[in-house]
Amino acid sequence: MAKVVVMPRSDIMTTENIFVGWLKEVGEEVEVEEPLFQIETEKSILDIESLYEGVLLEKIAEPEQVFPVGAPMGIIGEPGEEYDFEALTGMKRKN
Image (cartoon, rainbow, N blue to C red; front, side):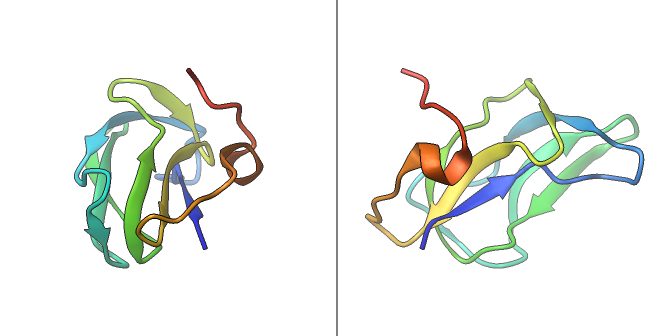
């Protein structure tokens, strides 16, 4: 089942972070606790580890954008898995 990867809270006061970039490509396998993407905080750049195992199905986040904590960043699931983007993320797909 597809899972949404979200922007994490980097500390108790954080409400948003800058997305630096992906460490995986669409179609690559992802293991739990494996670095998946990087964010920039006021103090440093952090590697964000995956909470899910599977394949990176889709990248939603683009580098150098600011995202609020909890915002959908990408989707991990089974290879070739079909999913309802809007139902899963609560967002309309950009065309």
